[in-house]
Length: 412
Length: 225
Image (cartoon, rainbow over all chains, first blue to last red; front, top):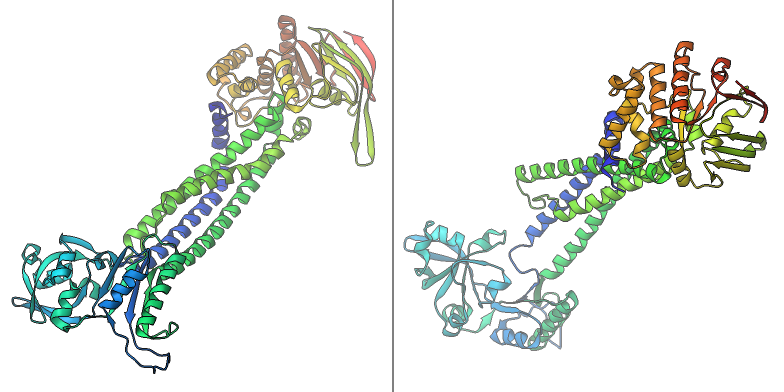
């Protein structure tokens, strides 16, 4: 069926009809080129937005205390809700399926110094699990651990920016050195990188929450509880959040429907929303892309139709000399597939090339970065091309097979 | 070799029926060379198409080399044409973008003969026609006589039992016509290939063993030359 001879036969036909072949291929190359550019741009958009989500687990939920805005059980509005260690323990015990949980204090930007160097940094007292919730990467040393919490050690994990500012870039100097936070010395036990894009996320210092409570507050107050939902489905994650809300509502007597008593940031919900949006955008792009390719296929089909008409006599001769209808169909279809495949491949390469060029030379912006066409897209486009080529060739091939030799040869 | 009896053929176009062949009986022995004459519209080309399995007959019986030709599908018809029949046309009907050698080799392509082998065989046949130095030329670079000799080589390459020629000299001058007839006569004698030549030229018809005249869809005269 795929004899070398037939390919040679097709090759000789193509070689003798260069312009026709070029015109046929161009529309297909254009279609694929556009599809790749569109898909690549879609990916660029998606990558840009995903970048916005970086610096924190995609399944993280953050609950901060706020001020009530709804009257509830005879209590007036405007009450400040204050979380304590008790709430952290309550939530830890009531929700099921979380994989990391941490409480946090908001100490805010405070003066931190090392010898003669000093600066304002965001100090964040938390549990060791917060390292997972924030998805930080430890570069040197370690993050906080349970012993730090239990023994209220004065230790700190500092961001790489903090280190470069306080220690003037010599990281070997930072480890095991004591930095001064609000006048209290803390030993640097680790240096980390945060993938968040915010400057304050880069310039952050983590210390054990128990130490901070003891040293800076003298109470068991906390400001925020955060946890990751593990492998929970979106519905299960929602249930966990509801449960946490109910627990807090009961222990602090505020309406569960009060939007301000507690402040919730549910990252997975945002991610879900964006995923849905991008699924929509992708669908849209494929529809446009396939539309463009269909225009290309119709073009190929049209030109093949004309080609068959032009070749009526040749096909008549072939049939007279013993060509079966099947061999004529294969001849035309393979030519169409070859032209679409080859031209499409050129379009593919050009499209990917252009994307690479853009990706290399365009600075990534907030909503557009790294436009790319991945392997799956290329594979999908290739399969599409072969099917497209087959479709483009089918009708002209059937028409060619129906040519009656007598009529073909009578034509002068 | 060819045995047809009571062949009828009617062409229907819209409401018009055209009864072209009205009961043709013809017997051609193996190795015979006969000519068919007739005015245009007499049905001689239709007869040739039916004999060439390029068209179906409505009634009657056609036996080619002992095979009954009736209601064949296109695939079977194509195979029989390839195996038993060689065609020579007035307008040569060479494939314009193939050179002389490739044109001659084409029937062997449909017998799945390997490219190298069929090109080598094609060269032998071109040599017999005295055209080996023109093997790489395209048809439009050749004279009418050369084109017809290439067409004859192509008709011969599959070693057919019968050669059907439709006005083979119709587009040639008288000298070249005689040369082409020399070749056809020679092949008929040496290879014992049955030949049926449609022509309207008397001096061409005279060079065959027997001439059949068709008038209005029927054989009206048979002359032994």
